[in-house]
Amino acid sequence: EQVMDHFMNPRNMGEIENASGVGTVGNAKCGDIMRIYIKVENGVITDVKFKTFGCGAAIATSSKATELVMGKTLDEALAITNKMVTESLGGLPAVKLHCSVLAEEALHEAIKNYKERLGAGEISA
Ligand code: FES
Image (cartoon, rainbow, N blue to C red; front, side, top):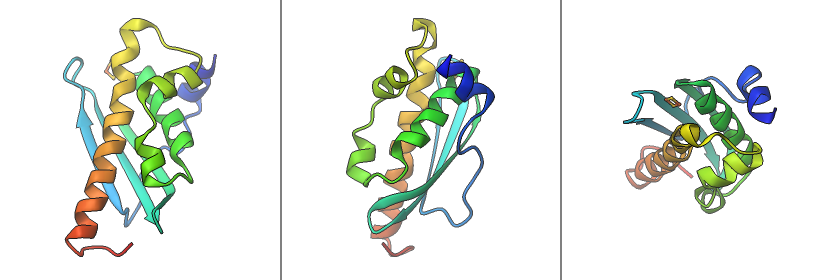
């Protein structure tokens, strides 16, 4: 039910202009792609959006993942796993579990991208 809700009414879909970090990952199993944008202020994720060329389960898990990381510190966000996301959605069929990994990986990439840009002096904290 929750999966269908997040699939039909995804939260935080879209992109962020002037994002602090962007992460894009592909799923080797199905070829689907996920991109996550984060806005970071004082070490806290103040905005997060996602875009995907993916299936319903990928959309639902990304939607839930963006809800879970909003307002979190980077360390707290990094601690959120695809398992926590699927559990908070009430579970996913086993064949769809690989879809939930996309959101976690894209989020990690976005945080990595943010840290790299910060380190390179491209953006300020
Ligand atoms: Fe590709 Fe779900 S089938 S992300």
